Image (cartoon, rainbow, N blue to C red; front, side, top):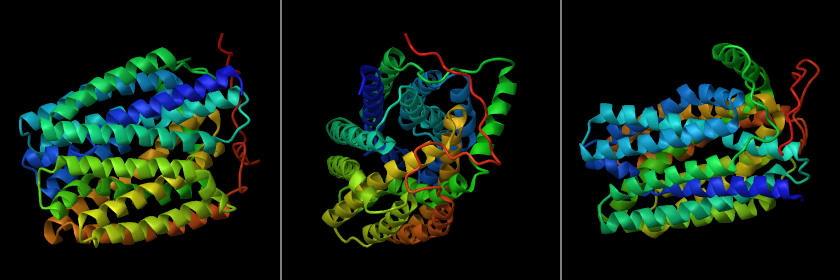
Length: 430
């Protein structure tokens, strides 16, 4: 493996690590900020649904920016946006803002994350292909799961115990500082390789052209469309679980201020994510088709979530959370590789952002619905319902498997009916 490839992989893993560290610093207490501000379960989850709505509205525009201005430019815009909006998040807590203010801040926060979602993986895949990387994408994505787990373990544990020793606003300020650090590191290390920004003509014309092409190579292709739709429920449920498991664990513990417990739970779940990343290749090798691995993962997670809802004590609930993180991390690299290998370079960031848009829209619908169920029946019943909802994804994944071109496609699938667009040859970095 040459030095340029090593540098690209190293930069990608550093960005994943720092991103996970920053994001997870308030992982244990972010929903509690809203509850301390006086919001009910329904209001808090409605505000968080606005976060996912922001994802749905801005995923494609920001992904298109990555496909026109460049992956690095989009990533830096995301870092600056998240730094500013994290400070606004802290201010909403300090002022005991109402649900409307939390909704606005949540949408703005989502915009920052949408800059990251398509640009990061697209930057990695473009660079590795241009540098003739002869390994598998799944191996890189699996290692990223491990690095992400390290960042999440460190950040969530540190943030929760800092909150325990001070108050739950301090980790938010620390997170803002980490995001500023992440942006500076990306500015220094992240440079577009294997991709030449296309800026000729008016920006609106560029956006329309790239968006149209991304729909052509993404949504209109059955192998990609069905796997996107399969994530609709899983993602919506995932948002609900990440947001609501904290007050549920505090309820099981009988202590509404046991922030350290939430840090321990987050750390153990992060450790499970790391293990899932390490075992991802072994998990994938059990199946001939990638879709079979994803289908198995969905079924397992459905059973785990139902068990989480029926847990009668903290240890059992944390064990279920760890199993959920293990399975999710174990199957995620196969999904990432599946989509990246089917999408042409020029439209990659936008199509990946469109995938995130479809997934996020599930959170817009399911979060307030399950939140209302939590207000009416308590926390246990919505988690059991969330597990049962996983079954909805199965028909879409089975349809995706019917269109999967090969067990391990190595290059983007291009049919005679859909010829690839000619792309300018990118210049090699000096």
